[in-house]
Length: 343
Image (cartoon, rainbow, N blue to C red):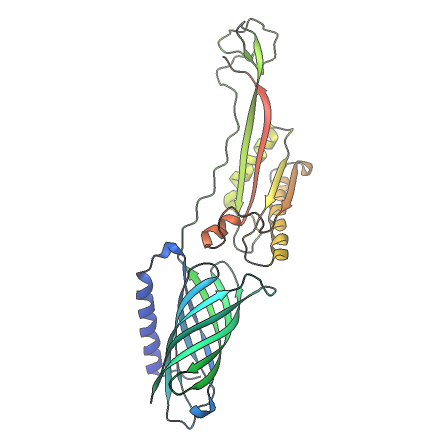
């Protein structure tokens, strides 16, 4: 594989043009991505060219989590007995990813149209192909595709294999984690008998009562509630330190209300197979459960954990923001108790 000064300049110019084009788009409608890689071509025998490999560069936009549009360019020096010495191609493709996965790979189809600029001639070109995508993390993926290229002017048929590293960026900002609700507290100005302002005419009644029309206290039911929402990085089950305070509040709540049990639920986004996501959600919820037990001293029989995979999303899996919200362990813990209140 050779890269001349002319090739480098062309790729630099193409990169600059694509970047400028991206700046005019509305980034919060989805994600952009850049895809540098390699392109191998098996030329039609009538071109009298050897098989060649060159650098390729794509810039795309995810309309949804299934459909993307991409501008792609590549440049390569040519060898063979034909008159052409180099090729510069630019094209626009649509890529559609299937919901069904092949193990850890996501299959997709691709098709588009562009232009071949040979050193001696030029032509309109159509392409179509199939490929697979491997998601390394939330922003990075490895992609490979097999394509057929139709040169429309001279009716040439070329075949190619390309591989690219796809880096996604932009999109909506992720929301901050919700703040846990504080438990309900008894009035601060109650005296030791549980009565406000000494108005209890029946001093032997329990302190968790309120005053009735006779001046005697009667029970009032209150509900204490606390929420937990721990979010995770893509394909990870490690509880991040930023959620320690929120888990601490849950532990404190459980200690204050010894009759309560925490029922934790683990969840994932839709990326990956159903079986893998079910296992991942269980690992996540088990990690939070273990933190409550090991780090905060909560008895194991007071923390239940169940994973639900991708079955219960709270946001759309079509955006990075929505998928981030769906990668979570959550719980709502409530308890009913009696306290006093003056009527």
